[in-house]
Image (cartoon, rainbow, N blue to C red; front, top):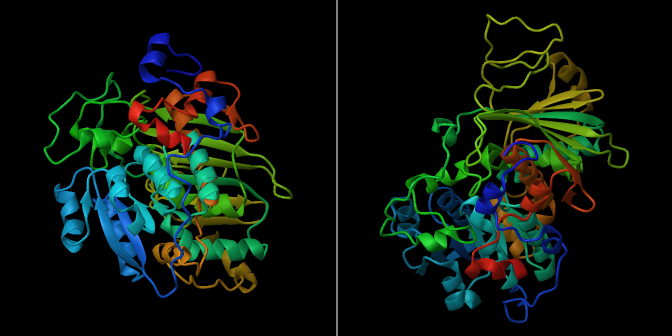
Length: 478
């Protein structure tokens, strides 16, 4: 694929498209969950009964972080690869919790014993487990990004409202210092009139070892005896098993993951997106792409998002840089960056570093800020300007709870989640649009009101994506 061009053969092979306009129209369809059960009211003195879907690797870390808060009981463990090495720590830590390989069977057997669900599965499989959980009246904590397609995120936002459940996306920095600082500085008028943001993630990624001339998905291999491969695939069209799909490798492939943008974007852009009320962009331009391949993500890319004016806030351009060979320019006075002394600074005062940690540079009409990822706080640059502004900066409140406690306390009615689907959803949809620009290697024009791509028919269809497999279609009707 390149630009608006794709062969009929490629189109038919890759996609069996659901009509985008129908799927985005919010058709009322009878829920599979009888009578839309309401969430159980958990008292402030109780612990939340938590079921865990995806218990290895990152999923296991989330489970441990939730359990450490002291606000939950682990009542069920579900993973398609029970018994694999990466699941054993959690299985051994909670030996009395019933074990399942299929979340549907877990709910069939013990839905009435579950208050909330944590979902730490691959990006493409967040959607069905989240939708079924919410339709059964279960609160949901789901890893970032929320889902694999724009339409899936849209349906999840609507379902959270419909079923009245507590939701939280797992961008944990949204409960740490950066969240409260950004909020306080915005309310105090320190952060205002932002016109541009540079976001960068230039670390090595799993797909950098792939050959960009690959012309097919990986060849089939024997399925491990412990793995329920069919359930692992979920809504995704069938692929033969290959070790390069599991244990994080799924992030490499357009069919399964969201690349560097989906992985790190929520940790870098979350507070700017929320407090600057960016919403959805009108243009998504692929400025640079090195190593384009229709199966896996590029070695490096630069994506520009144009957001319109919001009230008194001016239009804002967000530029995303990823890849080892694609570091962004940084302004004079940036400080604390590894530089190549053999490269003189350009005449415009911007410096291209040889190494840069993931983070962001925020440009307003009066001030420039730099920040890292997750909960890292912002600083005003250059240092001289920071010193001048020091006495004008407001006191930043401490976080009353981390991201995991915040979710569980919200389940008990004691707090509100800081990254619920109505906030995290539009952010995730921005990433979905960026990934489409990468995949099709083109510029997209987007209408935030109709939520349609207006200049590229294939891209507009991809807002919905490929038709789910027969036994998984019902989750799009919940």
